[in-house]
Image 1 (cartoon, helix red, strand yellow):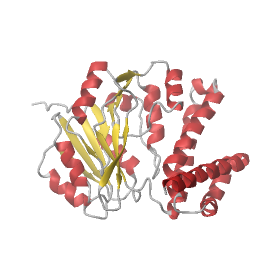
Image 2: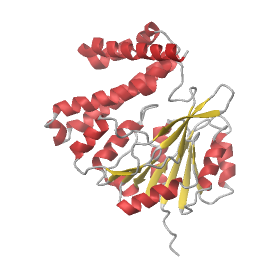
Image 3: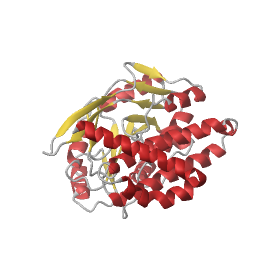
Image 4: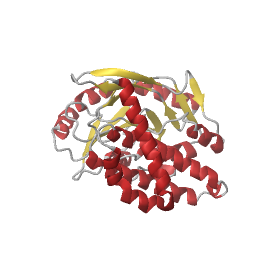
Length: 331
């Protein structure tokens, strides 16, 4: 008897989040849409995350546990999940986040209704407090109802450059056929791996839809990999940002649209670089001086930006000073 293909493959990359992973998986198992598979990729965790996932896999047949032998980062874990997936659509949930019971049902219904390749919802952003509790910090939505992006790719790119889209991998539903047709994947880097992936999805999707639902609970922890306030991570952040710019340059070099629009190519690179500064560099600037930061990244900045190094460093200096000003105002 032929098994029914799941409507959705939910891919959860897991690395050392033993305090959060059970709540994450429980929120997914409680979905009102039942026809899904839950692919949990344990990225060689060194805490009890893998053990917790394995125990939960014995309680529900929808959980498929993939255990990696070496830690390779969230992007590579998602790639492994995509290789394993059999669902019509894919969605990614971080191992320390949770979702509302209607999360999958809402995204799937909109994908079917609009014949969408990508459906993107909003989120509720929670920040970890000193007492260990989470406080609702922001409600993020890009539309008040339903926004179907224009088919014209130039208009889509303009919308992206105007910050009317987002580059996060969570909170979205992707048609697996789109991923496989264009062989889309996450690049091998420890941070910033979702920006180029989502840009290519925006470029290739025939129909890209934003909805107002905020069923995804995004948890911000300063000690997490993407936001850790650790001077030793600055090199890691910086090299991830540069690698993204290089990969983007390489892809655009082979596309006629960007060969004919070199200015657009530069604007896209500037857009990615701005996100990189905000997401990965500014959190570090809360704890370290400008001199310390510049000393760590100076050589790599010179290697990539060459004659533009002084301008880039000045831009970073400005961003850091803005961060100091915000910190002073909060105090």
